[in-house]
Image 1 (cartoon, one colour):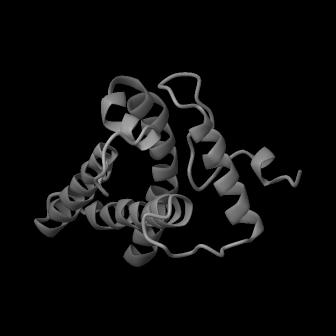
Image 2 (tube, rainbow, N blue to C red):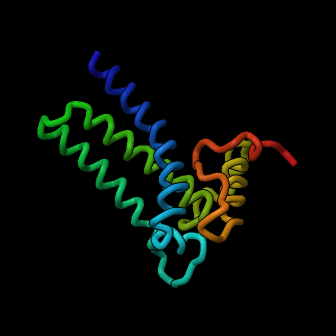
Length: 150
């Protein structure tokens, strides 16, 4: 029974992370921490790393903290929550950094309905170069209009 509860917590955490990514992107990255996110929209340096990568570090620290809370018997649900945050971060990295932005030259030929939709939604997001008036802040779950064929 504990395993089923942990799987449910893991799945709930993974899904909740999509909401957290959307909210963080819309209200924090395009809000008071725009200074960290701006170089993702306007590359102003030659480094492979972006200041925007700091957000990955933040969520990694949260995930590691959950693992440690579980390991030291402080919070029993820390393990499935930590794994859920890690799994979402890995999915986000694969979709956002590898598939969409091609930081590694992999997954270049993905050409299915879902891949086209999320790529189209992210492209629309990047058309807005400034901090305000953005759209489509989600990553794995985007509005259906981006999946329709033109």
